[in-house]
Amino acid sequence: MFKRIPVLLLLLLGPITSIGQNESISFLALGDSYTAATSESTINSWPEQLVQILKKKGTSVNTPEILAKAGWTSTDLLKLLNLSN
Figure 1 (cartoon, one colour):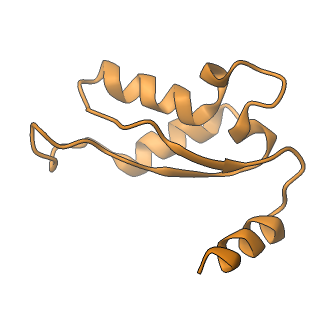
Figure 2: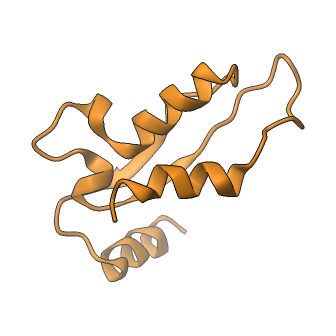
């Protein structure tokens, strides 16, 4: 299931044709150990893999903001987001 996430995100993004030549995409990745690449090199995280795929397609992408820790649940993420408001 994990390997489908980047593909699903790319399908949701579709062809990115509405950004200008000098603009970059920024995104926030929320998740758990798969998002944070726990026990892996950061380049193996799905957010970094998505960045590499988009760059190969010629899309300018900023380094993703990643809020993730091993073992986090949706509740943990919601608590973190509520604290930041």
